[in-house]
Image (cartoon, rainbow, N blue to C red; front, side, top):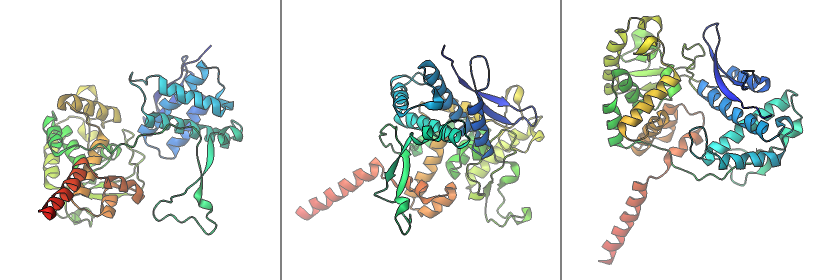
Length: 377
């Protein structure tokens, strides 16, 4: 008899802390999966990451149950069958899964198996067979392989799907204007302008507190030495909505006058909520019975879904981050400055924004063609 597993959000009665668990059809916890998710939460993984991992693990466990595969002793051949099943069946949204989604699902499963092996739940050889030794022929910039060249050898997933590299999705200038103009209230407008202007992640935006908004020309009266209007992005574990900044290192990000003006408009609307003073979170719910409470990830997702429908094109939080980074690079901002603005720990994470756009490639070809025509005449 096959068992269907699903991911579920659980709220602790102490402090209303949100966690993710994996349940079967009888609402019984899958102990190993839930323990792994608890460990990830303890390692400060974001709630959104936990949600995604829980869902991917539930898919894997359901497939194992339906195909008479014991996940504790899974073989490489069975993992290959799981990969083929992911490719041939639609995802939860009814659409085929992308290669990136399939690889991410396999990665989550492999990490779960490694956790189980490290804690004696399964044999170490089960986790070991999921990866194989690879030799790095090309090293990342600045990487030191050591005297014996030993660090060129890495462990890579044995099962994966070839991905077609896609450029990061960024909005055009006209689309950015449409997004801002389409927002139906001052809160949504401020969030869109803030993310477009600073490139912060959605978790960082939802985790902002009013004390982080330093919008005076001089903030020394607040005990801050950063000049000009700016926001402070901080990693906090006690946010009421569970929002978590990915980077553990705090950073200050400058904002322009339009963002300051948008915040002033939103602050008036926020202060008008009778329960707004119950928390210090910048973004709160403005409607329904949850008015005044800190805005959640789900509420933000619903907001961007509404924006997408009204705009007529896809608008996702990370697209705003990509748009900000792309605009900085196109404006000639040094890559190390872009890295600091985005809060990237590694320069390689920022280097992806150095890709050439279609307009850049067209301009290069036409420039050379014009030079040849001029030389021929």
